[in-house]
Image 1: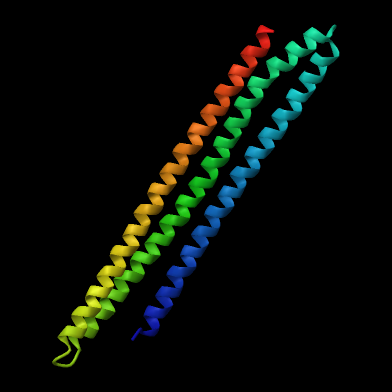
Image 2 (image 1 turned 90 degrees about the horizontal axis):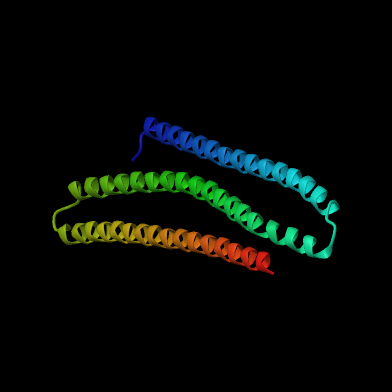
Length: 183
């Protein structure tokens, strides 16, 4: 049984965790807002420059060359924006994962302590039931660790795929821009 002091300590720890996660979530939102403000400001500045360039075009050939020269930087900026966005999201996700894993580990330790305490106080002849309970707890812990490893591997694969996609898109934009300049 938990004592009132243990319950209060548990609630305090939960509130501190909640406060920490809320702070991390707000930090992620602040980074996202800052990224979007920077991107918007840059887009407005580039739009003004582009408009001036379009207004100074003298013929259709020059207009086509101008448009082609803008495609590659746009693709690179889009890829950079996506990368920053991904970094913000994954960084915030990592913080939440760490907190979750810590709470799960804490819960597993508490449950193991309860099982051990119950085993010590179990009546004679219940050794088999106690052993089965300890085995079930160990199996559950192993299963959770396996799921954590699988999620980590899936995250690593997703990040690698994202990086490959970004590189491919940037290279395609470079190729398209170079082909347009040759015309």
